[in-house]
Length: 119
Image 1 (cartoon, rainbow, N blue to C red):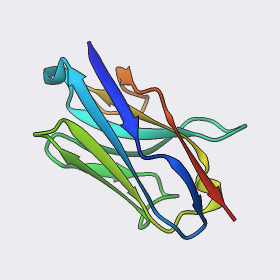
Image 2: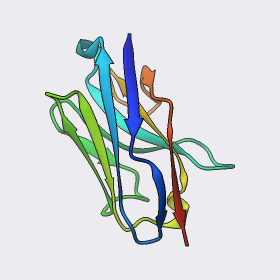
Image 3: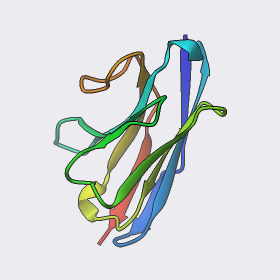
């Protein structure tokens, strides 16, 4: 089993920044991809960003140029640096991880962390 523990959410004004962290523990050998999904009220779940163990990353069009995903394999931790935040970025952000790509979600999920951007 893999456990994912997120931290770093909160309330920020539009234009501000936040950094989310997600630490993985347990059967780490089963993880290649790590990333972040978000779900806003009344909207479908959206893949925000993902990164492989080798460092290949991809982003949702809505966050390109504003968000940066990174990973510390030694610490089994993935980060999401969110800059120039907008009210539409308000959502619960979930860390996910899996052996393969995350287009349909990973095998493991964190509990979620709330990000609220005020206008």
